[in-house]
Length: 196
Image (tube, rainbow, N blue to C red; front, side, top):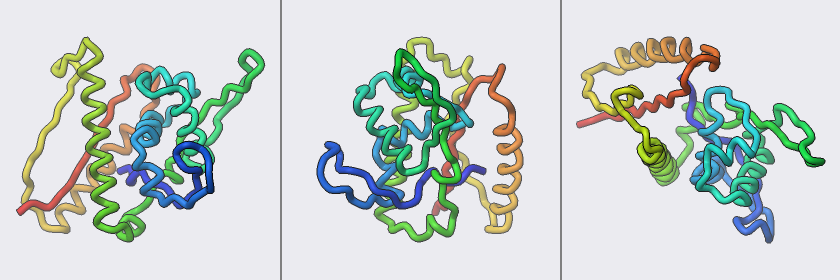
């Protein structure tokens, strides 16, 4: 199963682009709502230009989008997959470096409760935004599009849960390896919490 989308430490200028360069933690880098949406746009091994990103994120101002793409590229989360000349300017195609934008369970364990709270809030806000944009398309049909959201309670030992996670990892990994051509891109989100 894919790991959490977070990054290693990096440096970025303050939000107005001026002033001293300050260190930014991995959580801070992707808690920015526009940067999180940009990263999510690349999921599924997509390669996109900033022009294509503007089409996917039409509500984001062009200067903001370019600035946030530059921050992600400088931090090593996005890499240049190709470049071509368009009207005398270089148009870059980017792809997500998933390994640079991910941390494993051991690194996630070092985050504070407040950092986890912020990350989860950004994650859920991103889901709400995705759902709103889907509904606002004008042709949303949850049945036709196979949209679902459900919650189920399972009674499992830790060992049974680990076995289930392994089985899900296999099933999902096989589907993630399918080529994009002729298929519809779908987002699958999982949240697993203990319940009383």
